[in-house]
Picture 1 (cartoon, rainbow, N blue to C red):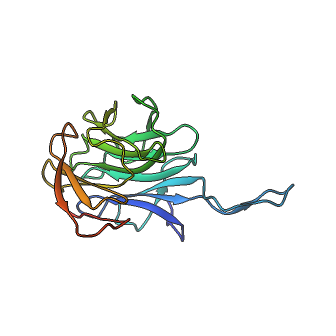
Picture 2 (cartoon, rainbow, N blue to C red):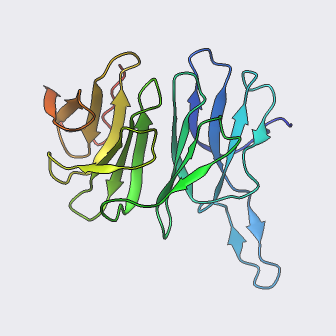
Length: 208
């Protein structure tokens, strides 16, 4: 166990009591002794967990990777981490990072992950991907991230965020260059427009 120290944090998830925290931090700066090239760790990150309100931390795995986004259930036990890079995948844990399972099979090639979220139970998982210049897909799982299906009723958009209700079955979604806020209440089987803003903002955010 150790203090987290000063790190370049890129994502954090906290349980409802604030006691259990899971976070992703970029790797340390390093230099190649032969070429002198500098690696600022921007392509790799580590996963860290705390079970005492952030007083002490453990590194969840000795391995680092292109981890970019994470989500956790309301109790902090079920954790999902988006892994980008050459072979995009999802890491899932049912015990706050003590053990991990890699999910790398998807109905279509996901491309680059841009957002990940789960409902309060941690059973339903949502991931947004950027598959091409014109946009990407929403993937959804109803079995704790074991398998995923594509939710593409809205067509390909440049999704920017996924925001589940703390208690409830609605999930809100935002997209870059889109003034509408969408929602689903059936794990992405259908979508409706929750609101249309009078302006387009590249960083729309919803809190529910």
